[in-house]
Image 1 (cartoon, rainbow, N blue to C red):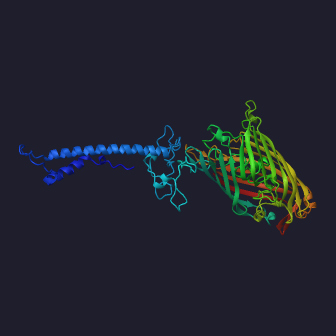
Image 2: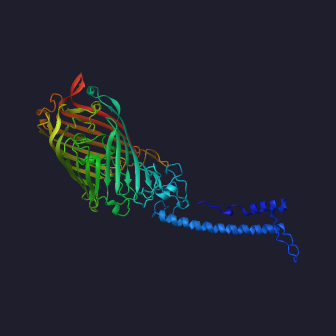
Image 3: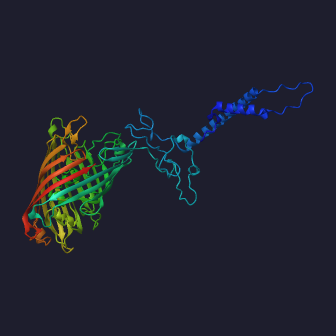
Length: 603
């Protein structure tokens, strides 16, 4: 409500104006005298000073009356506002010990949370400093919209069809660009993964394979939470094929909202790319979470627990790269029990690997278990981060074969461009489909101690294939990998999540000391073999391909800072039987070499 008290103007100015007018027009303040009484002499004329004094008294009396009316109206207004708009608990208030309107982290003054903006802005800005100074518009008071407007009026939060209040927000940058309400109840975090590389091959291997620059992954992550117990995770990806939706799932963490606020360990959720931001306002109860949407399936430690941006070698081993469950639509329960000693994931998914749909009504079941039995041990400190576990899944399939081509240096893809980038050792015939029972298992050991990491994983199973859509032939397979990595510069990890923070970033630091970043050396041996049924069943040509391959990867990883990594890698792959190369002068080969230089930016 606007203030119309005359006291807003300087009294001295008013006095001066009236005095000047009075001198210029002496008759201005003349009053009509009463009829003269015969016995009373004519009254003495009133001086200008007396007239001005009387005028000032009238002015003071009028100002007091206006003040009383204003106070009465203000009390009525506040009573109405308290009835229509009860005050929120703590939303939008400044933390104790901080300046009004500022967050504890000295974030810029946030917008008000009452949901109103300047006129003409559709409520997207706020030009009022206090909700007590705001008047309701006629549509706000009425609670309904004018006819023909679809009732797009403001509705207070305590009504049945209430809209959520607008909350003050802050912007932070750490692992990504984060937008959050001041109470951390709502969050939206943006991450970016860019990988740019060069792959080179010896002359005798070039045919289908070609030396070239390539972008294996360009991903944009949108993660966050809509209240403490509801999280979301969406990833857009451009890789070997077209732009597509890589991940899109919702996680319900109902136990989280029942625990008091606490700092989380910041390790990131398993089955993500390590980019689920730990919220300062969240609790730490992660015993049970429920996830639904398109996501990583929980098969193989190497695939489920290590994200693409955190890989030691540029790509995964032969087993994980070709026969992981990959991403599917489904739902999953996951969590950690006994203080993090046991991690589990179990769920049902459509079944086809790297898919967006199912081709039958039979889902696949998955189970993942990982234990850290010595996590809390004081006497066996060197075994704290020893991981032991296994995975299993199975179901009935009736869908296109995936993968239909087995390669040494990329994850599953149907894009033909991968043939020029990754050595191929087995290609299924075009009439082959997956049909019948699929069952897979694995066991793993992962060990982290100071700057050392050791990982070993063995997996196998059977897959049914068909060429006529009626009969099914089971093809067994088995593979394994062993890998070691060590930081020469002293960095230490307890999980391969959220990449590496160098002890000293590359370049001159604030103290004038030069840092080289982090340097990691690594080596890996992996092998994958399929049963002879892959040839005898007519699913692939034994004259062009092999059913057994191995690959050795070794190299150096250079971390310039937390966000930037450079891979220097050499891969040597060998084949049990010679495979075609597409090179007229060197048609078959029993081994290939790949020289890899990859640059990665992940924030």
